[in-house]
Image (tube, rainbow, N blue to C red):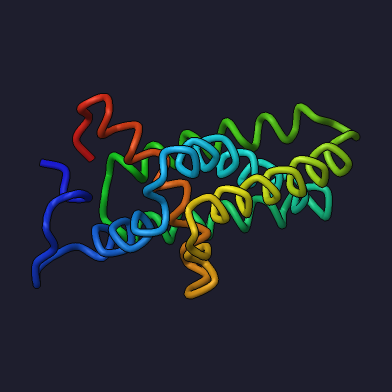
Length: 153
């Protein structure tokens, strides 16, 4: 059973608490739709900007992110994020010399849409409270998709 939408108890996983809290400021369907597009775009752009700085900076960031996801103890989500990391790194490498301008533009535009979504929602972004919610955002997108597909995570 997916526990992301179940009532929380004293034995809940940290992952469940994070997703429940994140979900509180992402209930408006328009805001959620914006996040479904903007979060992957921001993730791609951050990795691309780090890659433009130096490829090993991007690799270190993605490795650290995967360690964070592993600590949340969901094999399905970790595998999903690991596969997503491979796709993101391949896309970033595929941008070649245009990685910096493309990722900078994507970063700015995606964040503008994120803040529009939160204006619609009427709630501030979760990462204003705790920076780790920048890593929870991609999990939110993945778990919502998995919930709709009936995939256990």
